[in-house]
Length: 230
Ligand code: ADP
Image 1 (cartoon, protein in one colour):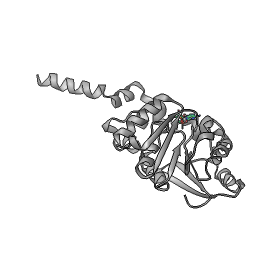
Image 2 (cartoon, rainbow, N blue to C red):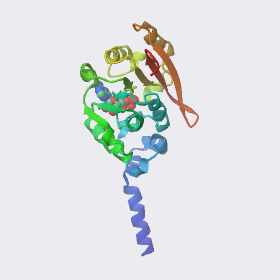
Image 3 (cartoon, protein in one colour):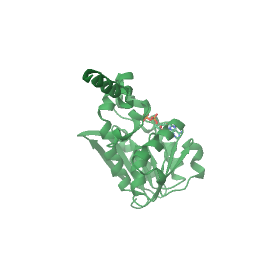
């Protein structure tokens, strides 16, 4: 009897979504081990797909990025499974979260519900590039596709490697909405190119660069562009 109960408990663990994801895709194990760095409330029903594991911003970093946008209207342009969106929703006046993938948006809504902030976000399924002319907000947050985990195979990550448009084009589109632009980029991004984006703008923008670490490791670079303090 006791053995039977133990087996059914084991089956429950193996069949839980997190264990299933890990067992069906061993290459995700590295990310799965960091699940609480990504979402501290992971065990309360967070949903992720494979792309989500690679691209979600670790929670501590998302908290810091959101803090600079306190009280503002923020547009999260490539929101994915919603790690940033949740933190923006906690401190900003409102959030528009955009992703081209409806499955990601479903997961983002679920994840915002886990954190109790779903009612503070307007979700849009769509292509940021196409939606840009109709968007209005105080701050634009860009965490565009870096090109998967291959980004750190190069010594210097140049802005033309960003997707779905190169970084210069993305920045140009972003500037039609607001000069207050935040970009979350690979740790090996070309800093000279970021400076160039700031001083080539008219009028030139202020640029603050932040190195984002989790567990003593650099996870990315956040570039804060603004015409005044964001
Ligand atoms: P990474 O290369 O960093 O892993 P992803 O390929 O996961 O990034 O992309 C990040 C998110 O951006 C994904 O959720 C994806 O659906 C979304 N995305 C990609 N292109 C667009 C777009 N044109 N407009 C809005 N969201 C997009």
